[in-house]
Length: 144
Image: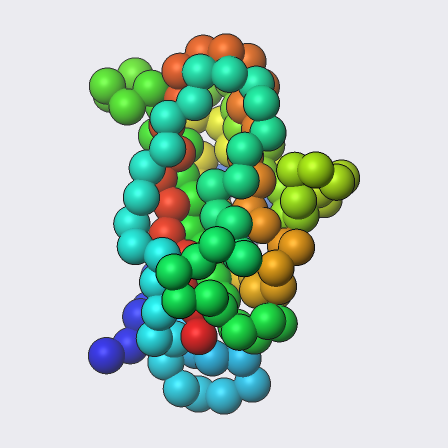
C-alpha cells in the first residue's frame, strides 16, 4: 500500500499565480518502491527551551538504513488544548543536540512541514522551542 502526500497552494499575493496542486508517492531512495516503515504517529509536549531530539535515528526500533529514503511530517499544534499561538515558534534542525544541528526552519503555531531526510545515525530531528510556553508537536517519519 502506497503512502502519498497531497498539497494545495493558493495565493493572491502574486497576480496570475492561481494555485498549485501536487501529489507525491513516498518511495524508497532511487526506486519506485513504497516506503515500508514508520516511527508511528506521535506527539511531544514542550514547556522548556531545551533542544530535544524528537527522532533519534540510532534509537529507532527497526533502525533505518543509513542514507536512504525517508520523509518526516511535523506540525506545531499549539498547546494541545486547541489554543494556537501564532507568535511563538519551535525551531526544527537536523543533527545531534550534543553538536551543532543545522537549522531547517521555524514552525509557528499551526505551521507544518513535510521534508525528505538522510537517515544517518547523526542526523536526528531536533526541536527547540523559542520560549517556555507549552507547545505540542505532532510528527511521523516514513522510511525504508
